[in-house]
Length: 256
Image 1 (spheres, rainbow, N blue to C red):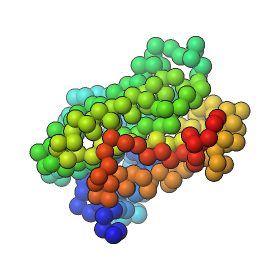
Image 2: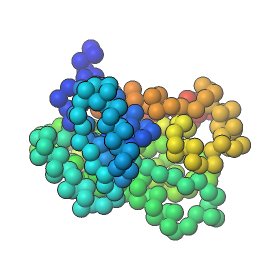
Image 3: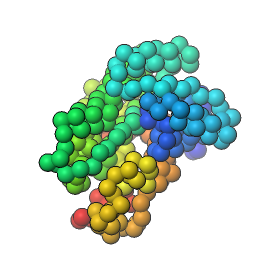
Image 4: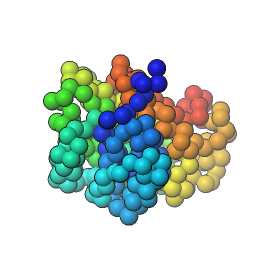
């Protein structure tokens, strides 16, 4: 049965893989057997992820320090990856940002930047990669959403809106691309202890409230998410498309 979860001879692209959740995903996919393409605007940090992958698996990876909102750079990267590896099997749209503040303080620049990275990049990456997957009648796309996509978390209007959009994008892509045997799904984390969280206002009364209303009574870690990622990237999830896996310690199951 474990062969169903193997990613041997698969090629995976992971955006936002320089640190945090994306780094954990990349290492896990490599450990499951995949060849990795790491994408992040933080090019220097990508080298750390590559070093950890090599240490864990001995596998060399390909790095791209590009802006995932730049459609031309995305297309160039995707074309090069196909030329190098001959195919693209898996795309993990993980790149994301947040800038928590009350709605009245959100600027137009905040809105455009967060929507651009969190939602537009997933559309642009998927558009480019799908055209490489369709001729082979195979592909796995994993979009990073959030419980904020279906719960009204305070002080994060652009983030919540972007993640709600990701959930609808995931469902629509699944409906439109099912004839090509592409599986399009999303992962919805709760509060995960990463640099993104630490740089926000979450170390305050709001975080305490979240923990008090999380049945497992702790923050998640990137390692709590890797099982869902490997599962959705593997043939074990072959009959799943257009849905999401929620990994939030039970937070969304109870009243906040």
